Image 1 (cartoon, rainbow over the protein chains, first blue to last red):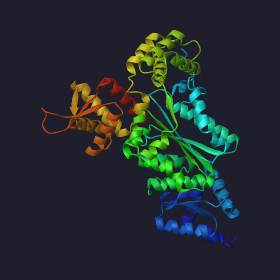
Image 2 (image 1 turned 45 degrees about the vertical axis):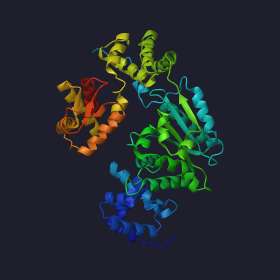
Image 3 (image 1 turned 30 degrees about the vertical axis):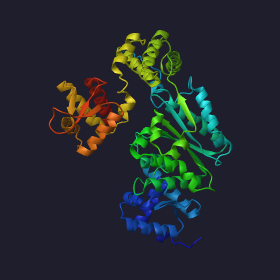
Image 4 (image 1 turned 60 degrees about the vertical axis):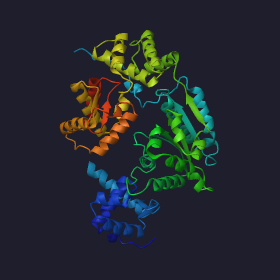
Amino acid sequence: MNPVSIEEVFSSKGRVKILRILADIGELNISEIARRAGLNYATTNQHLQVLENHGLIRHKKFGRIRIFRFDEENPRAKMIKNLIEAWEQTNKH
Amino acid sequence: MPQYFSVFKDESKLDINYIPPRLPHREPQLKLLNQFFRFAVESPGKMTQRIVITGNIGTGKTVLSQHFGLNITGEAQERRINLNYVHVNCRECKGSLFMILQRTILKFYPHFPRRGYSAEELLQALMQSLDERNAYLILALDELEALIRFEGSDPLYNLTRIQEERPKAPQRLSLICILRQTEYLDALDPSTKSTLQRNVIRLEEYSKSQLQDILNDRVNLAFTHGTIFAPTVDLIAELASSEGGDARYAIELLWRAGKYADASRMREVSPECIRKAAVSVYPVVRKDMISSLSLHEKLFLLGVARRFRQAGTAYMSMGEAEDAYAVVCEEYGEKKRGHTQLWKYVKDLSVSGIIETKASGAGQRGKTTLISLPRVPASDLEEELSRALMQRSR
């Protein structure tokens, strides 16, 4: 597993937003992630690249379309997803 | 306080989308479908199938296919085969292959992007997603006429030949084509036509006694015991059999008659309720027909119906129809569509038989399309549309 500092992932509001969206929806393309996160396409793309380089998310290609989701095989990704879900759950109460 | 009594125990069993547990008088066809698709559960991936189901309106084409879809996917699940059945109505998809494929892929990826690619790319994406999931798909294209009318033979050619582009890959996409008249297949190119015409299941119109069996099944499912009796069911079967053995019409009559009984606080659906229902259900203004129209098609038709009711004329020009539509749009707070779009609506509505059109001839200045409403009273159409639009705004 790559050595990744936790600050690197959580220090950006944009990245946390993206992770939250993916935890909520499951799979999504860049434009839709950007729209939901309120970010522009280029910024979203950069954040996605960082997250993918850290092994937290992965993408699937359908021709020109890239669809992103959590990399369920990565234990860190799983932990983050669980954390977000638990956080959202407590927000509801 | 008086207790509310309804003749219905579950009126959803009379809904157009309800799939009954048994299909009276369609067992042989169901068996045939099962035989055609036997390979899908015994040796999936080895071959694909293309079936045509044809028959008049209300002969059970849609429900036959859906019933089969439920059965076979259930059986596949038991055998741990990822077999999917997707039923798409081509008319609701405006006869667009893109929309048909998009609806299909959304079953696999609910958040698949809705724009930014072509129908061909979408078909590739669909095949890729089937490959990734090791899934098989039976795609039922209902009201196929719409797809052929709008896009010709290319979409069906692509759908039937996609497998040939991937000779070594498992065969994953089978088709069930549902249409009223096989004449539409003549519009296809010879190779697609021959591929499709190999397996045709033709559904004949239901006879009166067959309709009685269907109605009895639905009565047992939908009505409280002792609220509707055999002579009443016979009357419905008689009426529907004179309408060309249309089971859908029969079921809608049954539902409406129940509604009339409830509205009059009767404890039984009387033959008089059936007669009332028969007057209100015109074969062309059924609930399913109205609900399949887009918002602006409904608004346009409402404008037309109102204008006919007020003017009492047999024909109206396209310009008059547009004016009437503009008034309705204002009333409903909708931005009106342009002339070209309205002209498309007129074409679609005339194909589906609600309105009729003809070109204006001598005696009228200039050239316009004349619209008539020959099959249904304008006031009834207006009432149905207003009701549908009100439900939408709730």
